[in-house]
Length: 316
Image (cartoon, rainbow, N blue to C red; front, top):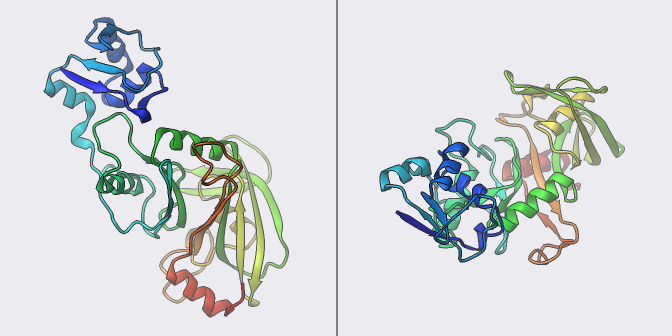
């Protein structure tokens, strides 16, 4: 038998949704069967699964330790404490992390280790979270492996839900900096449709809609150029896979070092130069007033800065 007390981060959700997270290896049918047979109870009583949980509720699960461990998937739960995460901002609800080039945001293969594992490990190491409950801190947006910059981590259920809402509704402004090939002199706003080839992990940009295509919007502002390359500030309005890289390449200005999309290498540069530099939050209510209408900036990697200085000097 196992008793679980509902904490703040687990309250406010339906009982069946909680159970699907807590018993992540169990099917929905199995969970409802256990509810009907009263092998899972809420506050000592039979439950249907549609109840809204409150902080302090007690969930009782009448499984053996072996069965519970199997349905919890505990053998697969591994979190990796990383004290050197570059935390740009942190409060009780969220953290803003400056992701390094080469780090995955989420696993691509089962054996991978990504920011999605490092972030809970970081909070575990700080003593702010412990594995075992239904809630696990997570990241809210993803960057490609070789794109550096700001990733939002949700430390609480409220933080995860609110940040996901802002991203989904596009009420949060996200800006990137990059160096592209060719000269660009005027700000512009691009619209198009993106289709991804899952086999090649590459996108194609189209002017017209069609099957398997997603609408995209990308704005950009040239900050300076040297007659051969341009330093750009990019406003990512929609957030699709490889959107900035594909969109800029489609107008003849691939990101420097982005060989996949027509760019060229630069003096041993092993990856492309694209950095998620700014997040601007809209007006927010409690418990998010500390980030309401504020801008947060993350510096690009030193290699990016070195190449920028070599190409453009001290121009901004």
